[in-house]
Structures are given as C-alpha cells and as structure tokens.
Image 1 (cartoon, helix red, strand yellow):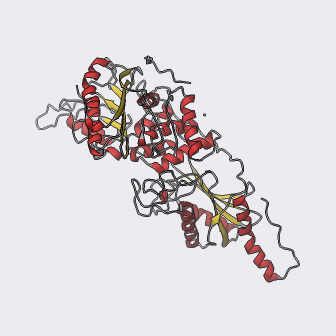
Image 2 (cartoon, helix red, strand yellow; image 1 turned 120 degrees about the vertical axis):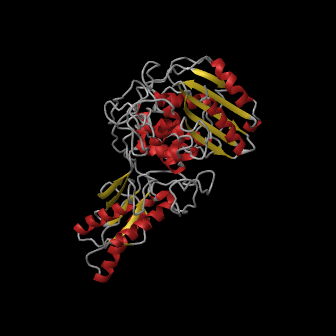
Image 3 (spheres, helix red, strand yellow; image 1 turned 90 degrees about the vertical axis):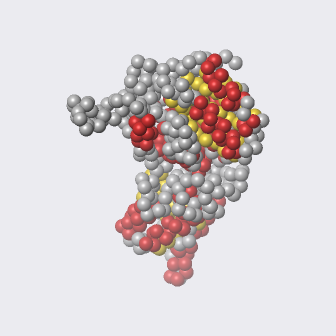
Length: 531
C-alpha cells in the first residue's frame, strides 16, 4: 500500500405514597424512616433513564512559541513539572549537563560572558525535547528526516534478526514533520498492542470530550424522601486521602454536603449511591487482577487497599460500596449520621448539595499514559462512549474509541478495541495506526491532542520508563510501554541528534523472555537517537 507523504486525517419508579395521616404516631415514624430505602430499591431495579451528557468546554489557547509542535497553554498542566516549552525540568537539566559548548546566560545579567577571571562560563541552553516543527532554520526546529535506506540499515538487524522479539513482529517509523513513513516492517499487520492501546484511548477521549472536561462526583438530596444519594461521575482519581494533591476529594465533598444538610436542619440521612453512569459488567475479562479494579462509576483511590497511587495493588471487591461507606464515615465526622449505604439512582427531582471535580482531562490523559493507569484508561473509554451516545460498557467503550479514530480519518483497518486499557488480549492495533495517532497528536492544528505526547513516559525519568534507558538515550525517548505475557510493545517519539522528531511503533507477539524482548525494543528506539 502506498503511504501518502502528507497526513489525510483532518477533519465530537415510581415512589411509594406517604403513610396515611390516621396511623398511630409510632407506626408513622417507622414508615417515614423506611420509605427512602424502599424508594432506593425501586429506582435501583428500574430501567436506566437516558443519560444527560454534561456540558463540555473547549477553551484552550493555541498560541505557540514556535510554529508546529508547541504546547497549547490551556493544555499543559501541573502533571509535569514543565517549563514554558513543554519540556520536563529534569530533561532540560540533564541536557544542559551533557552539553559541552557555551550558550545562553540563563539569568546572570547582560555582559556576563564568563570570560572574567574566576567567573563560570554561562550554562548552555538545552533544546526542548518537544521541539517545534518549524524546519532546520529555526532555533530548536525539527529538520526533515532522511530517506528510508538509512533507517532500514539501522533497524533491520535490530528488529528482524533479534530472536528475543518472538515469532511475530511489526514496526513503523514516521517523520513528524511531513507524516511520511520512513520505515515499515509489516506496518499494517494488526498485533496485540497491550498498553499502547492507551494512546488510542487518549486521542478518542480528548476529541470526544475536550482537554478541559472534568469528571464530577456529587451528592443529591431527594425532596420527597430525604434520601441522600452519592452520585458517581466516573472519576477513578477521586480520593479519600487527607491530602488530595489537586484531585477531587471525598473529604471535601463530605464536608460541603454536611454543611448543606445542616442548613436544612438535617442531621440524619438515608444514604445511597448511584453508579448508573456506566452499564454492563464491572469485572474485566481478565477477572480479578491487581492491575485493575472492577470498573464502576464510583470509586475512591481506584479501590486500592494500600497507599499506592500507581502500579499493581490489591483492590476492594466492590469499589462503589466501599467509597460510599467511607463517605458515611466522613459525614459522621461532620455531625451527620448516615444509614448503611445501598445502590440507587438519583432522580431528576433531586437537588444537588455539593460537587467535586477531577483535574482537567488533559491532566488525566497524561497521568494515564505516564503511569499506564488501567483504571483511568477504562474510565476515559467509557466517558468517550457516554459522550458519543454509546452504551458505557466494555463493548460500547471499545466501539466508541474505534468510531472516533475512524472519524478522524485514521487508518483503523484491522484494529479491534475491546477495552480502553489494552489488558484484553483480543485487542489488535497496527504500527501504522499507532504512528498515525502520534502524528495526529503532533499536528499544529490539533493542540487539544498535545497531552498524548506530553504524557508519554520519558526514558530514565518518568513513569513506566523510569528504570529503563540508563544509557545515552535517557531523556531522548518518550514512549508508551505495553506488556502482557508473550507481548511486548513500545510506541512514542524520539529526538535525533540533529533535531529531527520521529514517531515510532514497535510491536512483538509470542515472545518468551519479557526482559530480553523489552531490552531489544529499547535498543531499537535508542538506535533512532544515534547519529
């Protein structure tokens, strides 16, 4: 198949009646206390009502310091830390340390040339890892990449001949300046992608929801029964920890809810929880697994039973019920007693008492990619389904992701999405699709997709690449890792010594030694950083 040199993709129960006045007072009190529980049960078992898609904001600034791959001001978040160019501080400092020539003054003042006796030479300027696609003549600009013959000589021995890469392997390398494919090894073959699936999930979610979209958890009071409903908004980063660290806090929600109840002179409530934003089974096809909690619209700290914030961890069997019990305990600390919680659904007549929201989607995407966060990935895939009118279960989420990519004009032939995280071994993606996703995220007219690039783990610095690339490629490779038994994948961007920016995707299936296969993929990516 001929690959075009320019990217073609461009183109969003009824309630019970009140107890009769004539009954004896004690019986009446009993009826009133029981009524919320009965109503809760009725709503929980009734057919789900049509979901209301929350308003989405698309406000971001497309102003850029350089033409092309410059980070949109409204997209860069505190997930970094970033400098104004979108470069992680650690990368910049290391790049300075490795430079051997002079450079900018860096704040020492006019005329500080470093020539005075005993005066240190000025620190060299470090070019940003995410450089602009402005051509070779602009400072920090990216040059057009060379022809395919040099890359074939480089990559063929590393990818074709290494037995560590298993029985099936496929690869693609693309020049992000032109969108031209520079190297292909069965680039249109669909293989099991593992966690590189999250790149597709990120692009789909950002285009369906926008980078400023937030996931909101709220409490609602039913006017007719006095039932308090904790309504899950599909935010797995909702936290019950004392230090919320910028995340939506269950403690804050409890405090605000208790204050609102006290204004109504309410000190005792029947507590329910609503998870109906999502549909279908909560358990992933892989079953009980420390890499993923049951997928539900209400959870706190991803259902983790320890103090971890990323990676595998034991999970509670019912995250929604666990979060609701924690919420009841927090209400008690603020002088409001709640009944043992049970499942329900908030009605349209319920009054919202309080709400807390996640960081913007741009930050959630970065966290998902950097830490390979499976809980976030499944949540974002389901939100993509909700936003596009599909059923928010595993099948609907996968179909929603595929549909968004197809609408963007991306090469989805052969791709199959059965979840958002890549834990499902029936997922299939081609290297051509992965590099097309990265190219789309780098496009000057797609600033809302920039978190797909800035969220990629950085070699020897962050996330799932923190312990890899101890050699000269540290800081030069940004890539999403993927690992399942017999599956090793890697897809991301790399900066060449002369300032070229490439996207690559390496997929291998049927490997027998995970460590050896991982090392082989790292060698191939490192090779792209060589002169």
